[in-house]
Image 1 (cartoon, rainbow, N blue to C red):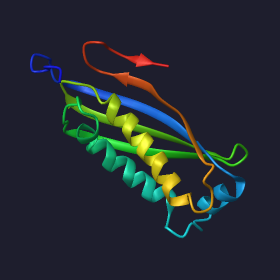
Image 2 (cartoon, rainbow, N blue to C red):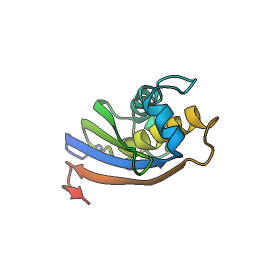
Image 3 (cartoon, one colour):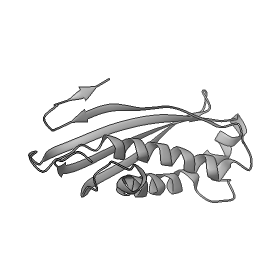
Length: 143
């Protein structure tokens, strides 16, 4: 782990995104809440939030953080048969929350896959990336 004890605690924020693509029928079933395991997007939202909070348990060199806010949002696009996933994570601390935002997106996407795999094993998770990070000594990064 990197020693961050000498760093100043500042407000830090990170935004990440990713995409999951699927068959048209799978998309319709998700939107109409017809997947037998339950409301896919609500479960994926909760999974993403929980995952952000547990990032230090999943990624070996991540610091455990007192996260102050996690948002997981979905933007379904029927024509493209995709669901774009975005996460926004905030903390007041000595290290950033980029990994927490990326883990939230990845876990939400994996949850969608898990809940829908019985009807569509060909779903594809892609384009997981950091969109923005702010706070700390390195300042702001944005695509």
